[in-house]
Length: 143
Length: 143
DNA sequence: CAAATATAGTTAGTATAACAACTATTTCCT
DNA sequence: AGGAAATAGTTGTTATACTAACTATATTTG
Image 1 (tube, rainbow over the protein chains, first blue to last red):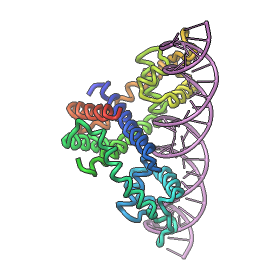
Image 2 (image 1 turned 30 degrees about the vertical axis):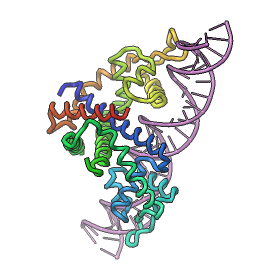
Image 3 (image 1 turned 45 degrees about the vertical axis):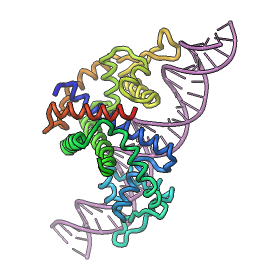
Image 4 (image 1 turned 180 degrees about the vertical axis):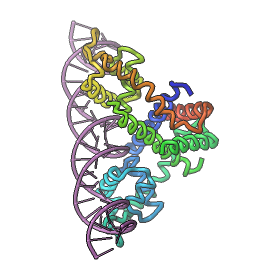
C-alpha cells in the first residue's frame, strides 16, 4: 500500500458513508418518516429485541451513551419510545417501543429496503461478502 | 441480497467509518497535532493544490459550504490558513497555507501514514482495490 | 461492614454534517 | 442595458459524534 492509498481509504470510506446517510435522510424526509436514519436504527433494534436498557441498546447500535441518551430523548418526545424504571437497578431504565413506535416500524420497514437497494446496483452478493469482510477487518484492527 | 443485508451494509459502513475517524482523532489528540482529522484533510489539500477558492476546496474534499466555512474559520484562527480577497471575483476568497500551515503539513504527513496503516493489517492491495471499487460504485449509485 | 471501584445515565463542550435561508456579486438572457 | 438567474460564502438550526466530568447506584474488595 502506498502513502496515497493510506490516505485514500479513509477518505473514500468517510465520503461514501456520509453519502449513504445523506441519501437515506433525504428519502426519509421526503417520505415524511418523522424519524432520522439514526433514530430508525434505534427503534428498529427495540422492535427486534423487545425491552432493552440504554447500555444494551448502545452496544447493539455502536453508539456512545451521550449520543444515545439524546436520540432516546427525541424518540420519547415523539412518542415512539418509552423509558420505564428498571425493576432491579435504580441506575437504569427499560426502553420499549410504544404502540405508535411499533406501528412506525411496521410502516417504514418495507420502504427502507427499497431506499437501501439503490446503493447496491451493479454490485452482487459476492461484493457484499467482500465488503463486509473488509469493513469488519478494519473495525477489528482498530479496537 | 436479503432484507437483512440491505440494512447491514449501511450499518457496517457507518460503524466502520466512525471508528476509523475516532481512532485517528485519538491519535491526533495524543500526538498534539493541533488539528482534527477533517482540518487535516483541508490543509493537506491546500498543500497539494496551492491557492484554492472555497468552492474549489469544497469540491475536492466533498464537504458542503457551511461546513467548510467553519473549518476554514478554525484553521484561520489557528494560523494555518489565510483567506485573501480574490483579485477577479468579489464574492470569493483565495485560500492558502501560511508558513505555519506548511510546516504543520510537513511535520504531520509521515506520522499520519503510520496511523492509517493500522486499519489495514491483514488486508492487502487486492482488498484495497475491491474496497475502492465497491465504495465508488455505491457513491456513484447515489449521486 | 465500610470503603473503594465500577456502572448507568446525564450534562456540557467542541466539532462536523446537512438543510434552509440570506446577502452581495457575477453571469446570463432578452 | 436591464432584469432574471446563478453563484460564493455566511448564518442559523437541528442532529449526531466524541470527550470529559458528574451524580446516584451497584458491586467488589479488604
